[in-house]
Image (cartoon, rainbow, N blue to C red; front, top):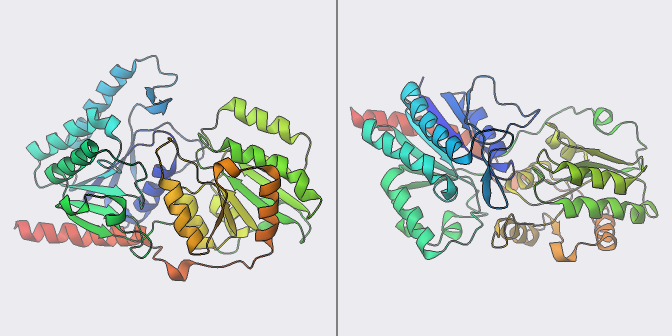
Length: 395
């Protein structure tokens, strides 16, 4: 069985980890997968059991700077340790292929470990294929020098680009202005989504509620951004109570600061219809059974909206001022009639309550027939064929 080494680093949220894990679920049907996790551990998040998980000493970003959390080691010591561990693990595994998630289109802060790794591979194992796994919208507007760096890294080290989008929705040429300068093959895999579940126990998720009670799901991914939406939802609940009975399930995300969660619970007070939790591995099931979803518009949440057909209101918030990823995706979804949106500057309790009521009166729609949502499986099948073809050509 061929071996794949899959590198994933999430620096602020957890979207990159979720998407990568879904791809890995399909890869393990054909390959032995070694998953390199460079971010902080998330309680309750599970990797497929067939995968060998290799944890690097965790790094993530706080205010644009690396932090190592509770470790007594310095950032520089951790960076050196990670660099050496990556190379030694590659030498141990001897994979047929390395997949880097998002790099080199982002993660340039990790050049200190990724450049030595790909240099090492080219020097000692030139037959190992190096592949980039990339989401639908890059988001951050790149400067000319950064675009030049991306092209140089792609053309010097990478053999293939897997672009995880439905080409009818977003093409690589729309995401990267210098697409013509990329020499490697670009494959549009379709969207990477989680498999929807059958026979969900509604009562187990939402408890015993009146059938006329509107089930409102609120989520903000990892939780480093999006607190404004959660606070506005809690305040809007009193407006909604005058119009329709409802229950609100809020998931803050594992990375929301404790003081923010405490503040949110204080605002909600003793409202029994507002339930606040940190994380659930059943978010897709909640979305399948919810009457409406309120969220940001990151890649994975958008995929859940597409696959479940849930009524959705999204608030496109970027990690940085120039990060347009969520905004670009939101505009396209809104034009297709899939979501309603509220810009962050327009987010008020009264306006949100009005939007919720309007959307609850709309028919629920399924969108899976309109999009290619089997991107994880298509990625695995393509790589199986690709690596077999490469081996034959090398004979």
